[in-house]
Length: 72
Picture 1 (cartoon, rainbow, N blue to C red):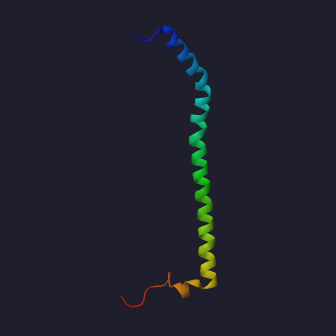
Picture 2 (tube, rainbow, N blue to C red):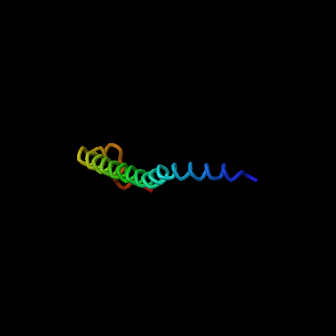
Picture 3 (cartoon, one colour):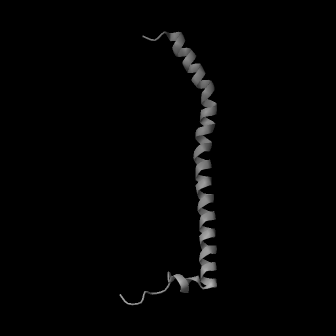
């Protein structure tokens, strides 16, 4: 059996640490979601700008990405 004093000290320590843990647990997913959303928005904007620039400059003619393939 574990002595009650050890259990009490562990409970007190965990209670003291739980405030920080709660804050971390509450903030971490929000920060992760914010970072993912931000990176996705930036990536989508960059992709749109790249596609617009490619279409405007006529690179599609050189690479033939957005044109129907000739033959089969």
